[in-house]
Each structure stands twice: as structure tokens, then as C-alpha cells.
Amino acid sequence: MADNGRRDFMGKVFGGWAALGGLGALYAAKKSWDPLPSVKAAGFTKVDLSAAEPNVLNIEKWRGKPIFILKKTPEIVAKQTKEESARDVVVGKDHFLVCIGLCTHLGCIPAYRPDKHDFKCACHGGEFDVSGINTLPPPPSPMVIPPFKIEGTTLILGEEGPEYKKMKEAGVIA
Ligand code: FES
Image (cartoon, helix red, strand yellow):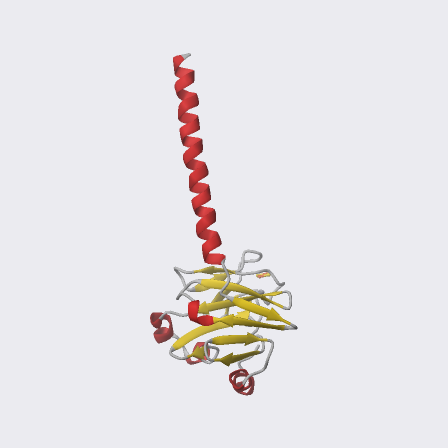
């Protein structure tokens, strides 16, 4: 009897801890998924990049699609190939990945792996590097860079600015 009581008590204590742990994990997840401050209007989404933290993936929504915004750390930038750098959206001294967060195989949303600095698609195992370039099949091409314009530290999705046009001319827009 006393034993059962103790087990009940332990169960409650453990359950309480598990619930708290769960809440903590949810909070951490929510915090890292909180979008950057943004304003949406008639096909355009304005995102203030000044609040972005390095190596933390932000997911914005533009015309019903998830948009990945990732501020790269100086270490990532230093290690990049020319091909990867060509896809960077540069704002001041900061380099960003900006792309439509849909796998180019069958459209799943790949997950960012902050420790590996790459993306893994859970649907069929495809992988993309930190610039959204496909590195492991089946994705046939890099994640798509949406039309964008830079104004100060604001990213405007849905408008073709000079930076976007330059990428287009260089053939890096997938
Ligand atoms: Fe991403 Fe198939 S949808 S690998």
C-alpha cells in the first residue's frame, strides 16, 4: 500500500517533470520558429532582417509559400564555394540565404540542421547545403530564390530588385 502510494507520488513527480520538459521544448521550438518582424501587403512581404540571429532559420510566408531566411555565420561565409556565395543575399556585412523552403523533388519542407549547416528533407532523404543547393538526390535542383529587393535592412519579397536581377543574369536563380 505504502509502496503504491510512493509509486503514485513518483509517477506524479516524473509526470510533472516530463510535462515541464515538454513545455520547455515547445517554448524553445516556438522561439526559434518565431518569424522576424514582417509586414504583408498585396503580394509583398517585408521582413526586417536586423533582428535575425546567425544560424537560426526563420520561416516567413509569402504567397502561401514558406520562405527560408537564414543569416550565415562568418565561419559559414568563409568556407563557402563561389557557387554558394553567388546565392547569398548580402545586407551590409551580413550574408543571408533566402529561398522558397520547398524541396525541389516533391515539395516537402526540408529541416535545417544547425550543427551541420545544411537541410535534410525527411520525405525521401534529399539534402541541400546552407545555400539551398541540392547535394544529395533525389532533389534535382537547388531550392528556388524568390523575387526580392533590399531596402536598408528590409527584405521585400515579391519585387525584383537589382540584387535579384543580378543573380538572374548570373544564372543562379533556380
Ligand atoms: Fe524532398 Fe522527396 S520531397 S526528397
